[in-house]
Amino acid sequence: MNKRASLLSLLMGVFLLFIWELSARQVSELILPRPLTVFTVLWKGILDGYFLSHILTTVVELIIGLLMGGFLGVLLGIIIGESPFLKNVFSVYIVISQAIPKIALAPLFMLWFGYGMMSKIVITALICFFPLLEATASAIQHVNSDQLTLFRLMNASRWQTLWYLKLPAGLPTIVQGLRVAVVLSLVGALVGEFIGAKKGLGALIIASQGMMDTTLMFAVLILLAVLGCILYGLVNILENQLWYSKENRNEKN
Image (cartoon, rainbow, N blue to C red; front, side):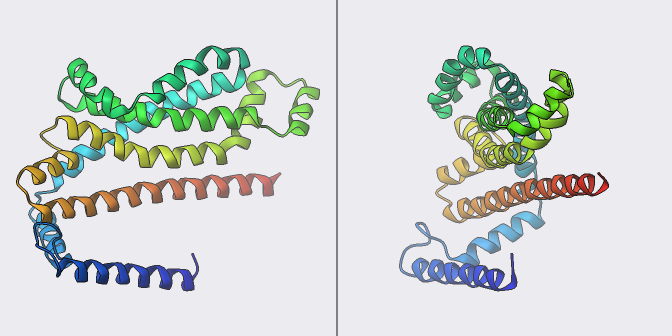
């Protein structure tokens, strides 16, 4: 992002804060608290550790869920990408699993896995699974035909073709799927916490709703936005590292 775009983005943020402050003055604090009040509650909650356990609970749920869903998504994506037959077998069931809203499945997961962390992890994994499956399968299937022909002429095995051609060439597409899955992992953790949880940022939102504490709710929403930006930024760092490693290999070759 160049300096001009960064400045414009900063000015837009200031403008949105101004609109927020102006709107908050027209209504009750119960409906829309003022920015200074929200940031004061947020800062105090961070300093005294009030938010820490809730943040850690949500982060653990989304990381484990993302790892589980991501691993299964990539693995099944490779299998489907390598075998059109298996794609025809599994595709109907994959679509059915995604057609059912996850929030409708959440009560069942609570019944099966309890109200602890496991049910939230399973919901998160299920939500993260599909984007990586689709991205991986697409990356495996859409490979440069000339490169694929070259590997066949060199008598490369199926495993060698997958490892040295399809996966490296498909990394940008897989990372795009990971970027979507990372954002959805936060949604998955929150969905589980909304249904039933004692800790976590989602549980804190439900608690603030019950106490009619709109200021606390806004503070938690800001924490969620920051957490989402951090996760998104980590994926961007990973993508840059992959591109850097790829360019170094090309230069050596």
